[in-house]
Every structure is written in C-alpha cells, then in structure tokens.
Length: 358
Image (cartoon, rainbow, N blue to C red; front, top):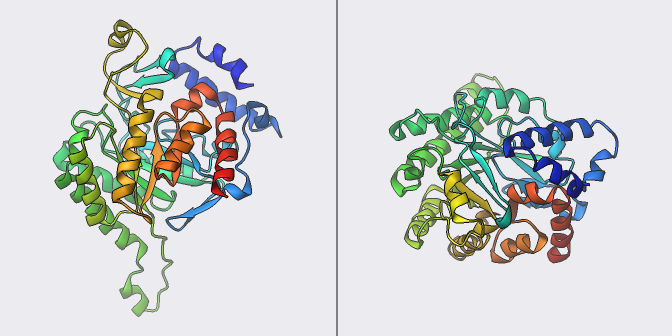
C-alpha cells in the first residue's frame, strides 16, 4: 500500500508529507487490522531480545527525529518497531531553524535536514509519555537548547534526564547533530565526560532509595537504572573514535548509537547545484550507509559486549540492516529508509533477523 501512497506524499514538501503521514497513521490505527495494509506488522515473538536489562520486542527501532514530541509512540509500536526513540527534546520549547529545512535527495535515496532540535520542550513529551501503553521500549534522546552556551550544556542534559526518567526506558545523549551551532564540540573527551558523569550521578540519586527514609520507617519505591547511550557522528576520525571508546570505558555508560547524519557531500548522485541550493544540514540515508557500518565495526572491536551498539545509517533494506548486525550492532534504527520504503521495511528486516539469529 505504501508504494502507492508515496508518490502522492512526495508531491508535498518533506515536512508537510511528514505531518500528513502521521495524521494518516493515527487515523488508520483506530481501524482494526488496517495497519497491515501499509505493510506494518508487530515483530514476531522470536525476534525479541534482552539487552541492558530491557526486553526489546524486536531489533528494529525508530531513530530520533521522526517523533520528536512523543506524539505517535503507540501507533509506531504496532507497525513493526521494537523500540521508538523520541526527541531530540530540550528543556525549553524551541522552533528550530527556519523552513525550508528538510529536503529529499531522491536519486540518492537520502535526506538533508537542518531541523535544529525543533520540539515542544521536555515537559510536553513527559505528559504524552505518561499516557503511553505498555509493550514497546521507548528511548529519550536529549539535547541542549540552541541559546544555551556549551559551558552550561550540562544543566540542559540534566534537566531533560530528570524529567524523562520515569517515562522512558533508556536515554541517548545527543552531542552529534550538525544543526545546533557548536554542539559537536561537546563530543570532545573533556566536556563529554563531564556531561556523562553528571547524568550518572543523577541516575544514582534517582534509582537508589534514600537511606534516611528507610531508617525512619518510610518505604520508597526504587526506580529502575535507566541505561545511558551516546549518539556520535559518522564524521569522526579514528583518533576521535578512540576518544569515544575511552569515554565509554571511563564513564561506564551502557552503549553507543552509531551514527548521526553526516556533513559530507561526497559521492552524491544528486546534481551538485541542487545540493548546494539546499544549503547546510546533515545527510541521512544511503550515502551514510558504508561509513556508519565502518564506525560500528571499529567500535565493536574496541568495545566488546555487554556494551551495546545501535547501528543506524542508510538502512533501507534487510541487507543493509544485516550489514550492521554482522559488523557488531546489537540493534538497528531506521529513519530515512522508512520515508522511502514504508513500514514493510520493518517486516523485511525482522524476518531476515529471525533467520540470522538462529
């Protein structure tokens, strides 16, 4: 069904098509069995896996950026996703960069985006997630507001972390978007360790009951220990990746999401003049497939399990997903592939994954 709808959606601007798609998804989910017409199907039972103390219904997740405000988690959980990553959310609502800020590179099966962390603020996401149904793993992708200087970035990450802690299952620290000025500087070892250390301190305070209350006879429910992962760019050098490895080991976080969008414009099929007219932004989709897989492989050699690696970048068919698993990914995420292929992509990956898992 999606292959018939896609040409119509592609007549609209990417952002408007995005809104129309999710409006349709929300409407269709109310009709029993209708989501199957779009190729969507819940992951089979034998696709489930346990990582970081969490039971994932399936290995394919939605990458951050598509459901920024946690508006569609329940519907997404019914079309084949094993987990959904909401956000990136920031402490305060912000409009992001001016439109147009999302572009299709159809010959490359890619997108360019410079969204700029547009979102309604962390409290809006919290309010929606309190209403979500059980059965799907939800990740909270957190970032800083554009007007927050890097020297104060820790505060923004801590605010989001504390607010979301009771309503998500894991966290992803986003310091790799190319669309917030100066954000990627936080990938450097020093500032990154400071952010991760602050979040781990908060996690200890939240998940450990207060001994003083216990001594006074008051019982306090212990919160689960929420895993923390780090999302990195594909444009890092080997030396920078070695720093990431050192940060993961030193901080003791649970994993890495590899990778975000790339600022590279190399080897694109779309005419150069067209790409230049689109302006700045990160490229996602097929052009980042090879590099993101290289980063997954590089990290896995240096970060043995139980460190979790989520592979993302250029997954628009089952073969691309299997490349990530073979390179060492434990889970994969899709975004641009979903735009071009629709929910049937999830069914294809889940089917091949089950066979590979055996």
